[in-house]
Structures are given as structure tokens and as C-alpha cells.
Length: 158
Image 1 (cartoon, helix red, strand yellow):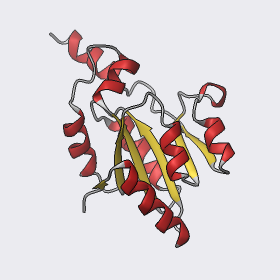
Image 2 (cartoon, one colour):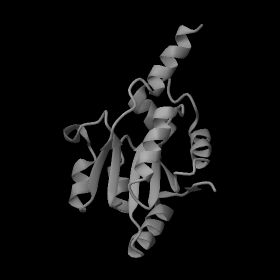
Image 3 (cartoon, rainbow, N blue to C red):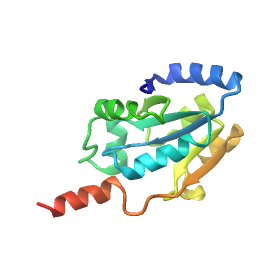
Image 4 (spheres, helix red, strand yellow):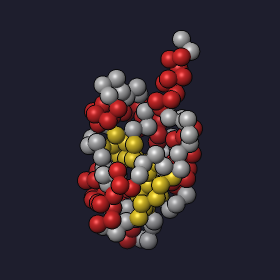
């Protein structure tokens, strides 16, 4: 079964319905440029925290703003297709901002998850999540497993 790829409006409608039914929604976001084991472990752990996992994926333009003009390595449509094949993800939504505060305001998931490389005081979404009564969970990062590290390794093997 593959994850549903939804628009922002479709996700809001779906989330409202699911929450009304008592479903615990977990939400996370990121670029997911080159999928690696750190991503997989992170997404599995995030999914285990609730009933349904929502993954918001940065658009190509927002990845460029966050990571630099040479990114993303994999175009957004392909990243969405790859991610939709992962069983632990229930819903995917693209977003074009550099952070997902406005999307969180729309969806209001009960749990917002970020990697352990983030700190609460540096998390732009924290105030938004706390304002609507959500919980923030940090998942320990897999050291040495990142897109940046993978690209460095590839470049060294030339």
C-alpha cells in the first residue's frame, strides 16, 4: 500500500476527519533529498508514536533556500514518488515554505516530530505547535547518516 499524496486542503480535511474519529496524528517534515538509512529509521520511529504518519516534503524551491543552489539532487516529484512507496508513511504533502508553521496551523497534528539534530529553542515551528496544544518529540539522529555525508562519500570515491 502506498501513501496518499495530498494537497494542503485535502490534508486539512482528512486530518480534521481523522482527529474527530480519535486518530492520533504524527507529523514531520523535511527535504528527504537522497533517501538513506537515517531517514528510514527516523520515519519508522515517528510512525510508531501514533496511528497515522503525515510527512510534509519541501518543494525544490524551498530545498534550494535551505540547502543551497545545487540542491535538491532528486527532483520533488521523484522524491514524493519514492517516499510514497514507504509503508510507514500514510500521507504526503508538498510544501514550498522553508518551515512548516502554516501547514501545522492548518492540520494541527497532536504530535510534531523532528530529528535529534534540532533543539527546541531553534525550532521555528515550536511556538505554533504549543499554541494549538500539540506535543513535540525529538528522535535521536543516526550519527554519520545524512544526505550531506553520503554526497561527501560519493565525491571522495571519484
